[in-house]
Amino acid sequence: MKPDQLQPENFRDYSPVARAFTVQNLALLRRLPLSICPSFLVQISDLDTCFPRERILLQNQCAALEAMQPGELDSLLAPIRAITLPPDISAMNWVKAPELFVERLSEVLWSSGQINAFHQASRTLFAAIPDPADGKERLLLIALGRGADLSRRSLLKKLARRGLRLEALQTNTAAQQMIGVLRQRSERTKEDYGHWYIDGGEKWMAPAQQGKSSLIETSYTELAPLRDHLLQRMQDILQQKKSGAELMRSALASTGPSALDSDKLSSDPVLQRFYTELFTKGSGTQVFSTSFVQWSGRELTRRAKPSTLLLRYAPRQRYRSLNEMIEKPLADALDPESSLIDGEMGAFYNWIEMNWISAPGKLTTLVWAEGSQRAVLIGPGTQPNTISHQRVTVLEALAFAQGS
Image 1 (cartoon, rainbow, N blue to C red):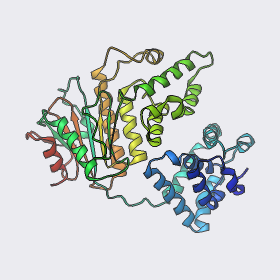
Image 2 (cartoon, rainbow, N blue to C red):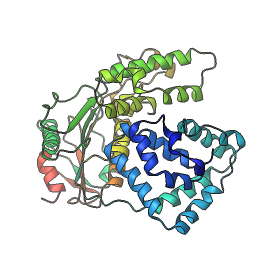
Image 3 (cartoon, one colour):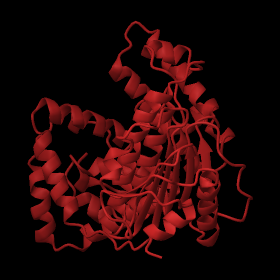
Image 4 (cartoon, one colour):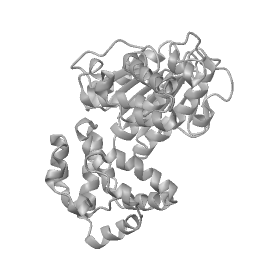
């Protein structure tokens, strides 16, 4: 089947929300080339468990493409139409299983040398869609380095070049005030999936009172049952004679929330899917808590676009062989020094990702080396590559960074 042959009945197996969306946008889907139409269906088929911002983004993209003049859209789609596909992939049931089509498409594009042309054409298409205005005041809080040597001069070097290095942060109230700011913002602005706390170990605080805030909080420890289920699946795959990276990746990608009993961790289908995909699609999240925190921040920024995000990098297990970490995930030996390196890198990328989704001057970031007086502050009120030895609290630092 080609996209221009699509009919409403082709989507009868989709969920009601997804089916209604496809019918609403059927005219657009019929105009898309085969090499890109299934990518839209992948997003549409998951609409029931998407974050609100993901739904809005997809709706805006479809509306913008539909509103284009026929000649403009045809011109943007022409390079994508020029992509040649072999008969076997064209014959796939891409409506029923768009994920499998997209996976096979990637293999074809790489093997045929068309991957660069496809990426360039896709970027040009979506670059023509205007980004919706976003004037949110965003706050990113990060703690890292617990148990490690925090005395080296190069600590948080990459971030310090972008903002103010604090050398006298008041430590005895730092964690408490970071939590307080997080809760105040979540209580003041009720926003679905807009305020998050992700911890790589045991959480700093008791759960927030129900009904008072829109804060979502979870940790590597709390999600251990889900992770254990997945590690058992990974172990079973490793024991197969034909096991390999591709088999592992495909098996993880096809593992849904119900297979891992994610409903026992949350009654919210959106969170069930999100928690599951942190481990089935994340890189290293199954065995390293630092990877889990970084990937959580990455995915939340990309998908939920939160207003407030607190990430805490706790010490991870020491490195061992992959098989050993999968078979015996509960390691007694932690590695604070390597975890600090992971956390520094992760924090830098977390800041970059939050900066991408924030309007200029709308993001404030505080990264604290937990247990020390050292931190980095980046915001509209700070200057790059500067140092302060003034004794300040977290609240005072944030107020200064925000220019108040």
